[in-house]
Amino acid sequence: MPVSLVSPPPERSLSIAQARRELIEGEAPRPRGGACIDSWIARSWQRCIEAGRRPQQRVSFDPVSQADRSDIAERNRALVLVARPIIERLSRAIADTRYFAILTDAQGIVVDVGQLPDGTDAASRYARDIGRIGVDLSERAIGTSAIGTALAEQESVWLHGGEHFFDDTHVYSCAGAPLFGPQGDCIGMLDLTGVQVAERPELRHMATLSARCIENMLVMREPCELLLHLAWPGSPRSESSDGLLCIDAAGGVSGANAAARQMLHQPLAHHAHALHFSDLFAVPLHMMADAARRGDAVLEVPLWSGLRVQVRPQHGGRGGESAASAVPAIDARPRLRDVETALIRKAVADERGNVAEAARALGISRATVYRKLWRGRPAGAPD
Image 1 (cartoon, rainbow, N blue to C red):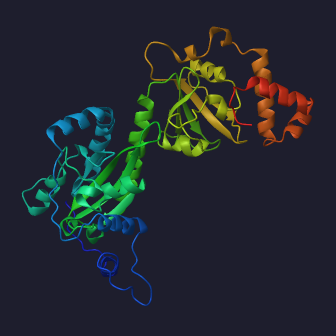
Image 2 (image 1 turned 90 degrees about the horizontal axis):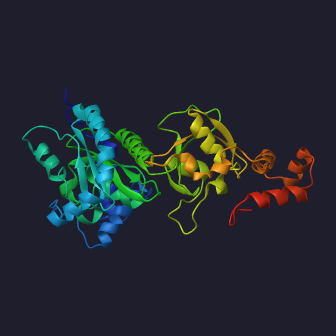
Image 3 (image 1 turned 135 degrees about the vertical axis):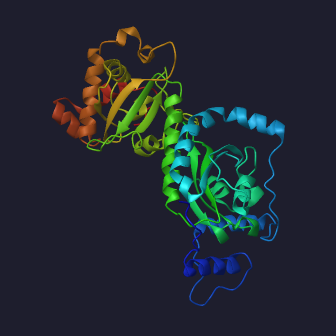
């Protein structure tokens, strides 16, 4: 059965109204402190005010031109293709709440929509106003909403009723989560919206998890030679929590999901300084290619940070050449020199970067450690 409309707790409604009087209308704060409102909502309201907007202005939900719609559809074809099955599953999960899913590009233009609520009542008409491909739902067009705010703040958000800037949008409740591409740039957002419905702040969590799922699917579709699945030792492995790292034919990092970026704490290839496999991992690249050929092999690999990570390598999404082609044929079997270098790197990582202790454990001099590590590392690798 559909959920009936439930008003928010009186104290929440009063808090939102007080915040609007203070931050939008300029009323002096109460003696016991200013109104309680999330900081990112206050920042969005302020941007609307600075743009010369007033809450009483009408919102028209205009679509972009047909030419622009065609261009936007072409640029976001891969995103829509990956996101559609996830949006369909979301639509089934939230159908009885009268919320629905919206996918936008990085500018807040709608590129796909889930199943809209049935009906001819006012709520259904409000849903159809925003649930159209090509409609501009950016902050510049409709003021504060989960869509514009998630894109501006680049974090997940929840808004209800009067937390929207314009009076015309107070009928909406919405959760939103930004979407990041394999190179780490914001490429759009996923929104779950209801019209004149009960508050469902838990949808913020659902939107966030669904957004991460879309991002992971995009990374797995990224052309690469090796796709590395990363997890901390001892942590349960799952498709939703694993880090994903794309390695190209030259050993460069060509893409990653949010989990991998957080685990490795490193910029990606679209930054000024391209990141190489050997900048992160204290083992030769061909070991990963060999493990990928073996199938389900999971390696525990030292990082240059001194941490260890579990890696399950697999052939990447590139057609034709296999991932092993990233390594010359002479490297199909580990060379003594590479194995020696890998053992030294492992010893240094085991001693948390203490070269003297690593040299003592190996029974060689510090000078030998430095010489062999320098020999085995590419130009530009971190010290």
